[in-house]
Image 1 (cartoon, rainbow, N blue to C red):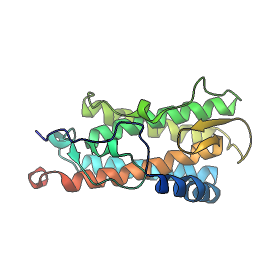
Image 2: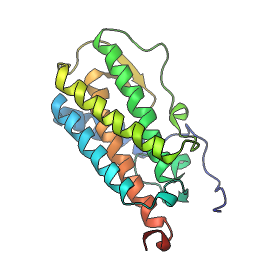
Image 3: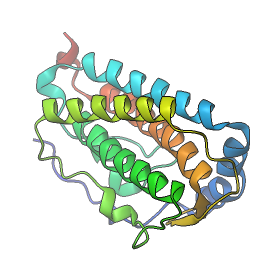
Length: 200
C-alpha cells in the first residue's frame, strides 16, 4: 500500500500567482468565449473523455490512489487520489453547480457559500456506483440543456465561488466543463503513475 504523503490541508488553495492568473485572466476569458450551448457541449465532451479513460482502466485499479505532480487548477491536497476518487469529486461538484444554477435561474441564492474542502471525495464508494452516478449526471445535464433556455451573461443573481468571487449563472455553467477538463487531465496523470502491470 502506498504510504500517505504529507500534503497541504483541503481548502489551502492554489499558489497565489496561479490563482491570480486564473481569477483575473484565464477564467474570465474562457467564459467570454463560451456561449451557454458551447459550455454545455464542453461539459459533455470532457465527461465522455473521462468515461473513456475510466473504461480503459482495469477495474481492480480504479480505486488505487497514486501521488502525482500537481497540475494547474488543483490543490496540493488533491494530488493523492484514485481515478474513482477523482470522478467522485466530479459528481459532487457537478451536482452542486447544477443545483446552484437551477436556483439562480429562479432568483434563489444558495443558503451558504460553497467551500473547497466540502467537495473533496472520501473514496469509500464502490467504483461501479461512482461511474453510474457520473453517467447519470451527464445524462441529466444533457436533458436540461435541451429543454431549458440559456441564461444570458450578466443577468440575475450571483453566488460566490471560494476562488473566483461572485459568479452569475453563465459563469457557473461555464465552470462545469472547465472544471471537468482539469480533472480529466488529473485522471490521465493518475493512469500514467499506475503500475505497468495494470495495463498488461
